[in-house]
Image 1 (cartoon, rainbow, N blue to C red):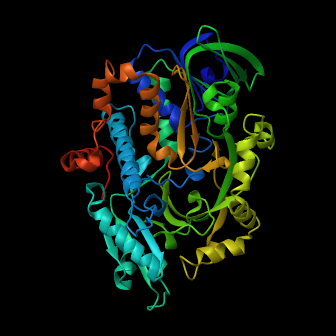
Image 2: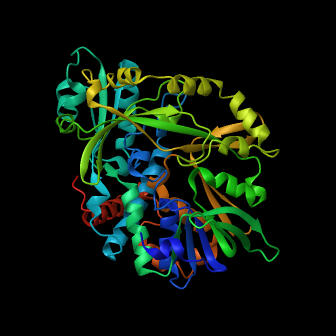
Image 3: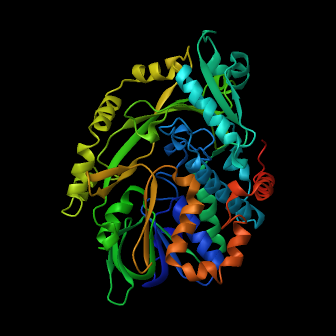
Length: 501
């Protein structure tokens, strides 16, 4: 580790301070540096390297969330029709990410894209007549959108055997199954991508990076700036710095830091930590029989992030299979956090929200308790719904990342549990925070542009606009309404990111 990253002392004042070394902060720092290379920017990360928490490869599913396979993005309405508006929105957001990454490759900021992104078909798989009919209607509706053009649908066992031989092995021919397949899907190692971006910022920009430095408190000053308490975790040194603009991208620790800022917009928010586990196989004989990410329906009362899926993963050049996630519970807000995180987050401003969300989500609490109590053998039984003859010796349990689901104030119920990603910004646009989980990393570019739109609206429409369109050519346009632009953008990113669909 470079000496400068652990022993340098932060300056007393910065234009921009970013809290956390995950994909969100790395993306925002890169965007801001491209817009204005003279900005004095500092990133503070409490651990010893970038991307060690939610962004780390095994702490998320690595799905380039394009809404190709995630059924919770395409709900069935009471009249039986399928709503694909959220799916289209998420697909467009991921296309923005790919454009930005292509720009980084074009400029030479990031090299060897295959080290962080690879083609991997995305599939939805359902069982039984009712779900097969839902999937058929979903496919019919999605095929009408340019974003999902080329999606295949089949109920034929022979066809399914070609697509997913591992899943179809030892299946009863009479079993009703249906699947869709989208070859444009990807597997992404967000950890590697983030560290590549971090290396560029370190070596080719004036962005200052401080590892093992934790932001402990953020306080407003009368002049509109922010005073921050920073702790050097190696030397136990504490100091205060001042920033004009602050972004909190600290995963589960974003919420307590946001609350310390005392902005009105943070009132009533609470956090509900959910951890996860995967079953992972490195048996290459199995791996060679499964070349897709296969998602199915969530079980009753399960949170959307617990949708079962069997995925090909490509991490550090090695292929593996991943199945899960199995939900867990810990009072920590980060994997390397404290067991006191949850109790210490409760205060007079959010206790009503927390209690309301808990009371109205008792089935979820029951589900989590059941999941935590599961043995490996019981988890293997779930896997055998996908792989009939799965052998326990081929699979190991791996702890996934820690997520903090947002709890918001709700007039009717007191508090409401949210499963999405949310940007919270104060009225003057001088502090922003990202809260929540899915679809997370996949939509980092969209999320960070959203932060900049809210905090620097004039610059985004003025002096930064030309550069912005160079980085993200589709910015400001709806791909779903523009087949020509969609094709152009996808051809561009396919070439630059060396994708093979």
